[in-house]
Length: 299
Image (cartoon, rainbow, N blue to C red; front, top):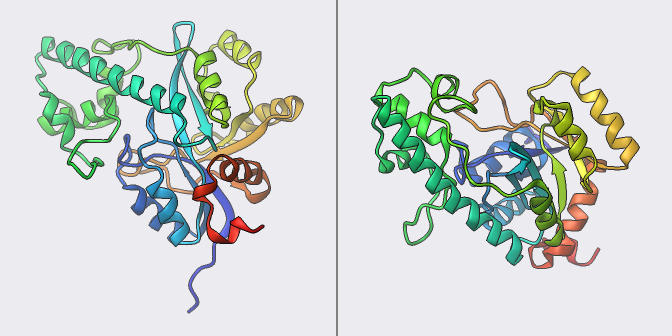
């Protein structure tokens, strides 16, 4: 039997062990190959540590990949997510923003552990490092640690049954042990992505419940919007498709695959086609010419 051939579908939203996914970048790429996806983008939370190694691994399997990240940002006091694509992975502003978020996460995690202890649920900081993580050559933890890791530690301690319960009862927005971390504005985050040559995209807009927040985002100079998202039916995609067409925004789509923590979502559950992906790929190679595969250098 012949090996399955890649189909021209690209999943532009998934997470690895560099944030809260259960698969390493290499394992994600292997899975993409078995799923017959032609392209993939790893959009870890507030970190780009998966790159450039993930790019090399993808090219080895004839899978197209661009740089990606999912940043948390503040619109007023409301946290929203922005996706950044095709930026230069060594741009100092991107690296500085990622570093800020890692420091912010450490402070916020400590504050949430303190609140949990007040509720009689003690979790030590080192317990957050017991799950699937990514490490540097010197053994340094390179993963972006956050609430999912705290919830996973709570499960191991027997305080809760699963991660979802941890968010619903204790760690979700507005819950007793939630801590609002210091943030960066949507405007500044978007400007950073664009300064690095990337495209700034509104992530899963269907999750934004406030019409006022939506209106403010629509006034900003975004490059695109995540229209196709695995968690939402077609009728929720249609209004955003019309907005994208009216604003001449780029259209993205992805599964938001995490692996074990979201077993109901599979890689490739939502995607875009090659035509919509082409501008992202072109911009990525323009910003990162040293990462272009040999067959791209002479096109």
